[in-house]
Length: 221
Ligand SMILES: C[S@@+](CC[C@H](N)C(=O)[O-])C[C@H]1O[C@@H](n2cnc3c(N)ncnc32)[C@H](O)[C@@H]1O
Image 1 (tube, protein in one colour):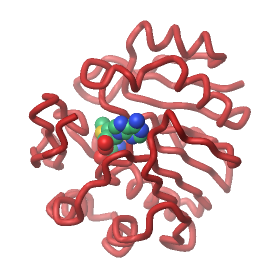
Image 2 (cartoon, protein in one colour):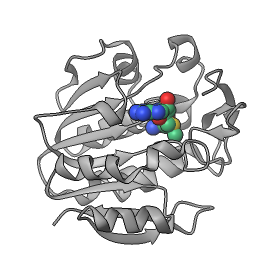
Image 3 (spheres, rainbow, N blue to C red):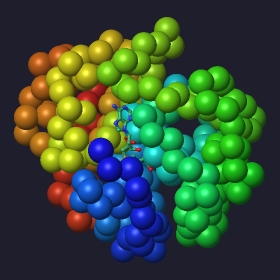
């Protein structure tokens, strides 16, 4: 894979990263913050009605989903244990150029800095409600005693990184999700949804973020 990302501005004004060699962006070019809020907050953590929630993110990247979740957890007093998996952690000088704090004034700069400066491979208390563990590991090798209420599946798309859409990954993620938990993703491809059903999820299609007709919520009943 090509890992020399450049910054691009998306249609809602927020930044994303672009990998030229893969011709792939980290977020929708229709709006990075808009997409993250729609897919992972509105159709992800918000649908879990608990006061303590565990979140697994596959593809931590810029930490955009993490800071939005941290903000949501804090506003709603939900104790959130967030584990983010990432194979290629981004350099801090690149992260510092991203405009997420200026594009969403609700986000805490202190929390954003802690999210990015904290240690990998260990739990970090970012604030009273948000505990973050960043792990430099492939999802294919991830094992956990902790089970999760919601999995944010935010891998590159099937065209750019087909191995991330292998049924075996979703089989092991199914086993890592609590009953009543969910896996959410922007992807709504037919084969992917059939694979989710085969490994045990019930699959719901809901409207996607602007520019995308549908997204997927997979429920573990
Ligand atoms: C679409 S981008 C993630 C966007 C990210 N959630 C954000 O908000 O910036 C996909 C991410 O998955 C990471 N990745 C690639 N292969 C992976 C793997 N096998 N396991 C976990 N993460 C992987 C990439 O390095 C990249 O950061």
